[in-house]
Image (tube, rainbow, N blue to C red; front, side):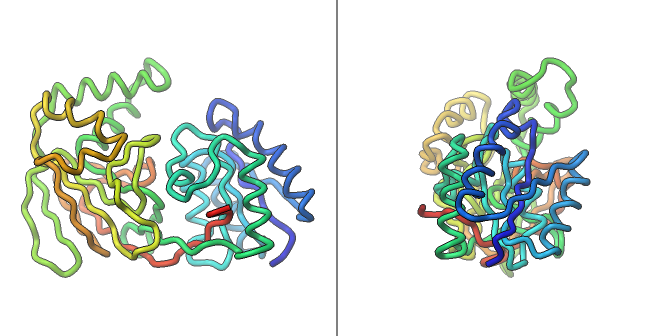
Length: 300
């Protein structure tokens, strides 16, 4: 394993925590004997291009410093390559780091875990989801339905800023709540016609900063957990929503969970979000790619 490694930094993550975290993380890695270079980028496309160049150039590891958005970009660069991924999680949600048991908002501990893993196991294999053949990889959840509509509405709003924007978007979508007719196919099974509030395809267990929508999903079993929330009244949805943070919503009679390695989703006027990033309108096909990435620091 080469000692040259790359920090892939989002300086704006977590209201500036990304920029502040890069320095102590780099110090720990240098003290462990690594040569560290930093990759930023003028925008997401430029950052991804630079990350891919670092991977193609033989960097010993790509270390994402930021939140789930930065991890998502890093996954596009390392998936299917020998280059392992490290995560210094200092964003808002940090769902990928939590799913892997990595330190959150502790850049020194995260960097130490990366350094120890580089000297030891070289990273633990983790499955990824992939949308559409050679398309977007995701580590946690592909969301569609009520939750993706909240994201769509929030992204269109210019005021207010921050979390309040999405709170208002949620209230607006609640007012417009209606079941969505889906066509769902699991592996090579028959096409299912289901009415649902949302369908979440989980490689990992949570999204949105700890909402355990696919609470029992594992990153190493070769299967998605597909959570289907059936038609709900506003009152039912509001009563079930707090349970998502504990994962106890899975026992609700309106919730069903399926497992499959390949999922086809179709619905009219519904977008899909993977790891919190918009991947486009349905239909989509998602498949598990076994052992697509090696994650550093797991179990450290």
